[in-house]
Amino acid sequence: MRHELLDLAANLDRIIRDHLAKISGYEPSHGRNKKERVPKDKLRELFSHDPLYSIFGLDSPEYVSATLGGGTVTSIHRKIGDLYEECVREIVKASLSLKPAEVRYVGHIASGAQLIDRSLDCFIPLDRLPGPEEKRLRSLAGAGFQSLAPKPTVRVVGIGFEVRHCYQSADSRRAQADDAMAMQCGVSGILPVMLVFCNQSNRQILRRYTRIWYVTEGMDSYNMVKEISGFDFYGFLLAHREEYRKPVIDALRRIQQVE
Image 1 (cartoon, rainbow, N blue to C red):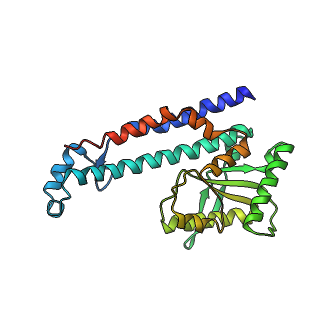
Image 2 (image 1 turned 60 degrees about the vertical axis):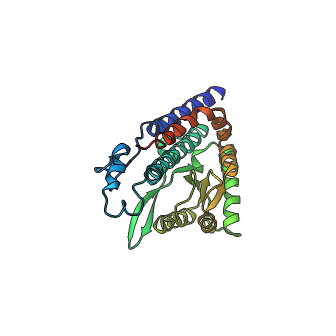
Image 3 (image 1 turned 45 degrees about the vertical axis):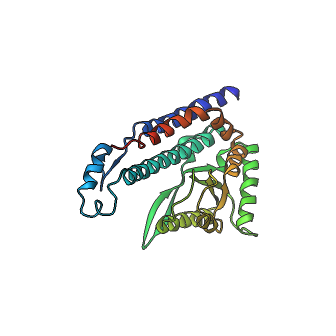
C-alpha cells in the first residue's frame, strides 16, 4: 500500500507540474481572437491611437496592466481547474484500482431541442469494486441520495463527480447543462456530486446547485476525496505549497511592468 501511495503522489506531482508549466510559458497579450494577439510592449501604442480608448484613458499604463492581468488570471484559473479535475480522477482511479475507462461516464442530456453527449469529470462504478469497498461507498452514496430526496427510489449504481476548483461563472447555459447532467445521473442511480475546492465561489450558483447536486465546498471537498480514497489530497498539496505557488506568482509578476 505504501508503494502504491508513493506512485500516486508521484503521478499527482507530475500532473500538477505539467499544468503549471503551461502557466509558466504564458505571455500576457491582448486580442480579439487567438490569431490577433498583441504583446504587452505594443499594446499601449495600439490603444493610444484608438479613437475611443485614447479619449477615455484606456491607453493608460493602469488600464493596460488591468487588461493583461485579466487575461492572465483567467488562464491561471483555467489551468488550476484542469489540474484539479485530472488529480481527482487519478486519485479515484489509483486508490480504488479502477481502469481509465471505468472512471468515465457519458450521459445523453438535453441541450435545447437536441440530445448531446456529456461526460462526468470522474465516475465510480460500484459494481467494479471489491466487496468491502462497494459496501462502504454504496452506503455513502445512499446517504447522499437521502440528503437530496428523503425517500429515494432508485437503485444506487455509482457516484459521479463534477470537479470545480472554484465556481464564479454565472453562465446560464453551463448551469442548465449541469442541471441536466445531475438529473441524468439521478434517474440512473448515480449520486451527482459537485466538488468545489475553494471557499470563494458565487453563493447564488452554489445555492442553485444544492437543489439537485450533492455539493461540497472547501475543506469538505478535500475531506470527501479522503473519505472515498484514503488519500490526503490537501496534505499532499500543503507539502508542495511553495513549489506550486511559484509559477503562478511568476506569471502575475510578468504583467506588472508595462512599457
